[in-house]
Image (cartoon, rainbow, N blue to C red):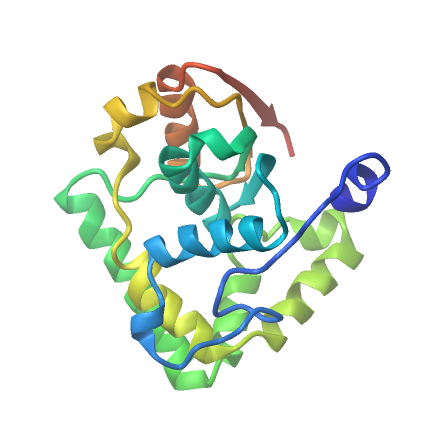
Length: 213
């Protein structure tokens, strides 16, 4: 809906990260990494002839968008990060973070994706969606069921497993002179709130929008 509304007066290009249909799903795990996700954004922009553009990222895509901005700030007119979360800040947080990823990997491997669909369907960040917007919930669930288990496993074992912490990148973030909009809600993961508060206090050109319910 957002893209449909914006397309009234903007050219909107939407894409899924590699490993997520309808994008390609490489079998080779070596073809997945955070750096490759950033280069994928660059390749799309270059292929479409976009010298400068507005970049919007959601969830995992918001982290990739921020990494892109740190490397190619001159290409961006603005940056919008929805539900952006930092990687683990310390050893205890990293242990808990990796443990959660291991649970997801186990579900995907044991249930060929069906168990993971159930797990993600009850994800704290989405659990209220069914009551608030039944149609959107069903679309979300259907998308989960149609996704590639291989792509999800490769992404978890690389992009997520090796995620760095934004809290270790204060200097780079303070130098990022790209107008940035932060969007998150009270039903997101607790780590998203602390990440966005940190980004709001660190990024030089920044606005935060906090959404209730």
